[in-house]
Amino acid sequence: MIELLKTGSVAPDFEAQDQDGHNVKLSSFKGKPVVLYFYPKDDTPGCTAEACNFRDNTELFEKNGVKVIGVSVDSVNSHKKFHNKYGLTFTLVSDSGRKISEAYGTLNGSTDKRVSYIIDRSGKVAYVYEKVSPKEHGTEILSKLKELKLA
Image 1 (spheres, rainbow, N blue to C red):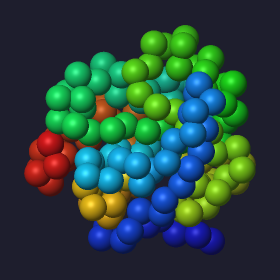
Image 2: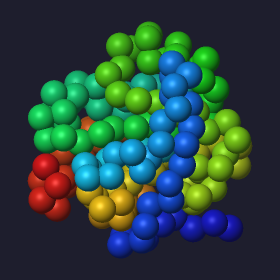
Image 3: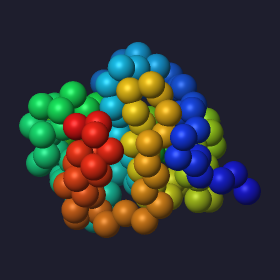
Image 4: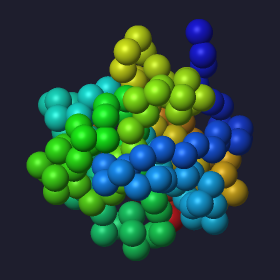
């Protein structure tokens, strides 16, 4: 069984397509904090609540120079529909090949566990959320970013 990454470990780089079919490479955000959040499935109650909480806090993430990236094994097309339906304001990447999820230890059968990583400016894992409360997660992460002096 693949384990979650630990605080202090280097965040594995990846390149994957976002909801618009553009390639997204994690290393291109080096120098700014990144919230990489894994979720089970587009347009389900918990995942929608989580995504909408991130969306509702977009201004604060942007003001603090934090990049938010959602990851699931859903397709680019599924991400596009989810992104548009809820007016999401951040990047969703498709991990249909499950390579990112494997590298981050988030696979739970055929979907992802709900896990979030805060990655610091140097590309290292600054914090791991193994237990996520979907409705308040974006707000919770903003507090942790301030505590870690990343925001």
